[in-house]
Image (tube, rainbow, N blue to C red; front, side, top):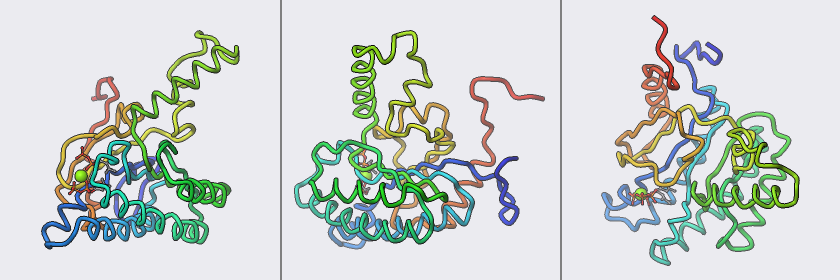
Length: 244
Ligand code: IPE
Ligand code: IPE
Ligand code: MG
């Protein structure tokens, strides 16, 4: 197997994508405001990149804010933006120290100017790093991503850069925010909710899915290894039949 971790005795998926859910419930259980849950969640996020590297994951994608999350109360959105601002700042140092290449997927539409600047700075400063590719889905929604891709494809068709003959699955993938990144092998959603909530709809066509009960602020390296252990028991067929 191409990416075997001897110490764990496990095949490591190349690309793991996580929907970090359950911050609000974690706080509620402790009679704390929801934003305390988000703050704790961002600490776990700082740790998870280290864990991913030590396990041998090459691509990690995390869903931190969806295009639908603007529907939340103003104070919660403001709190989340403050946490994201701080997170993006610390991320730049950590990424350079640990050689991560950071990419942000999602739309700039609706984000404050300083956050857009932080995103650009973070991507620019880490673009030559050769270790973990760390994608942060921030103000991301898969349908929004597909709409933006279709617009760009149409513009390129109108300008004569491409013809309808050129349009195939590879071309569509190359117009998505995740261009150049292999599709996720495994998508994990914490907190037990069993839905995808507009995450990587195209890219996740053949991903293995898992929905552990653990709330995101309680997620740790052991939880990630558990998920990979379950993944090792899956039989990926991609529409074919298993060889006897
Ligand atoms: C996930 O935690 C973080 C974001 C969506 C930003 P939630 O805030 O959705 O937590 P629950 O689902 O209310 O517990
Ligand atoms: C999905 O979680 C988005 C992120 C984790 C960033 P939500 O908690 O917003 O999703 P729903 O509303 O339960 O589907
Ligand atoms: Mg939630």
